[in-house]
Each structure stands twice: as C-alpha cells, then as structure tokens.
Length: 339
Image 1: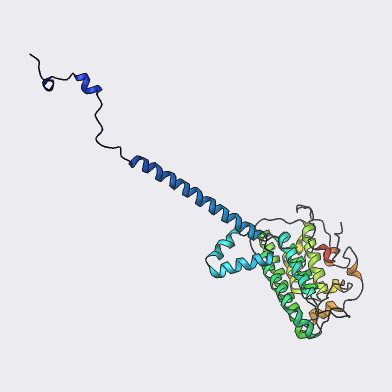
Image 2: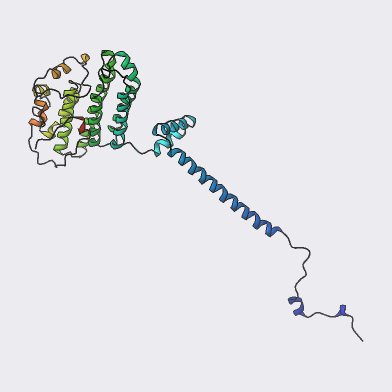
C-alpha cells in the first residue's frame, strides 16, 4: 500500500542543501547606493576642477596687472573687507633696502617728470611747485615711512644707518623753490631725518650695552656719512653729530664729547649736490656756521679736516670687521676710508 508523498519525511541533507526560494523580485537599494556614491564623486571632482580653473584664471588675470593696478586692487579689497588688512600684513614680506630703494627711485623720477616743460629747463616758481607738489608729497611721505621702518626693531644698526644714508641723499636732491614757503617739505624732511639719525645712534648705543660689538671701520663709515650730510644740509644734522660723538665716538677715537665739530669743519666746504640744501633761517647760527666754512678740505677723497678722520687711535681690543660698502655711494659722496 503506497504512502502519500506529503507524509514522507525529508532527509536533513535536503533541508541544508536546498536553497530557499526567493520571496519576490530583488531589492534595488544596493544598486541605488552605489549609483549615489558615484554621482557624489563625480560632483566633487567637477567642483574641484572648477575651483582650480577659477584660481588659475584669477592668477592669470593678476599676472597681467601693473604694480599700480595691483596696489589699487588690494586697497579696494581691504576697503570692502577690512578684516583682510591684518591677513595681508602678515603675509606680505618685510621690506628690504634692496626692494625699497628702486621704489623710491621711481617716485623720484615721477617727481622730476612732473615738472612743466619750458625751454629754460625745470622751473622753480609757484606754478611749477603746484604741478610737482602731488609727486613731491608722495616721495616725502614714503621716505618718512620707510625710514621709520628701517630704524625700528628688529632692524640691526648696520641696516638702519645704511638706509638713513640713502634717505638723506634723496632729501638733498629735492628741488629748492623760489618761494621760501614751498621749501618747507624739504626743511621738515631734514628735521625728521635728523631725529631718525639720533634714534638709530641711541639704538646702536643700547646694543653696545647688551654686548654687541661694531667694527671701528664700520662706525667710521657711519660717522663720515653723517658728517657729509651735515655739511651738505648746512648744519641740519648738528644735533645728531653731537649725539654720535657722545654715544659712539669713543669707538673711533673721539674720547671727549665736548670737542667741537664746527672748528674741525671750518676748513671744509660742502660738496655739490643736486638740488642743494635749503637754507633754514629758523635754525639760527647752526646752519650758517657750516655754510660759511671756507676751503676745499672736505672735498678730498679721504675726508681731511674731519674729526672722524683725524683721530685714528688703534683699538686692538675691538674686533675688526670688514667695512660694508655704503649703499647709495653712487649718489656722490665718494669717501674712502683712510687706513
């Protein structure tokens, strides 16, 4: 008698090996997840490409700008977004003498080119002054700003005195005007530079107290430059010279701060300089004493007649350093150290 199939027991192996039938169509969730990930990756790549492309485009646009246009662009951005000012200041490298000197020279050229043309050459009347004044103001303002920068920490005295020499040469070359009132730019710049010289002298002296050592020839170079500037400006740096003698004079053999520069300079006369010095009547006899000094002593290449050159007491206890070439020597000083 046959037994019905529904009552037969299945072997355990059949339960294990037999796959369970699928209950409906396969779920599309897995495929959708992969598709979404692919789309996100494509979107990120596309965004990155667009951003890089925009950066390259901006870089190319900036690369075509002149310095003046680039400065104007940065100023406009800072005006629109004041918070950028600090970031830009932190990112911009500190100015150096090598980077600033060509910029000041360009401003000087701009000033000279702003003179109205006449068949007699550059005029010195009020009309010419009004034409030149904007460029003159820009040059003077930058000279003051950069001199303040180079005579402030962390600049070392050698850098400070090198730039002071350059800045003072620029001041000598400023034009003199027929109207004395128009010469205030030059006169005021001389006064500011004299204060910066004193500031640099005091800073150098304070570093001596901290243990710094300056070579005798280096200090002598500073002294000769300052002396010649005082002659050219007709005594505008007399106070700076006295400060130099008091603070640093002993390094080059000036042991008596009370010794007079005026008597030592009486045999010298100023070297010619473009634009000359503006007579300053407000300084009393200080300028006239130097202006009336007589012969050609200071025009000699070794600076004869100078108290800095006349005292060469060897100081073996001081380390000797290589004399740095003074920047701006091509402006016409032409001094050489006496060995």
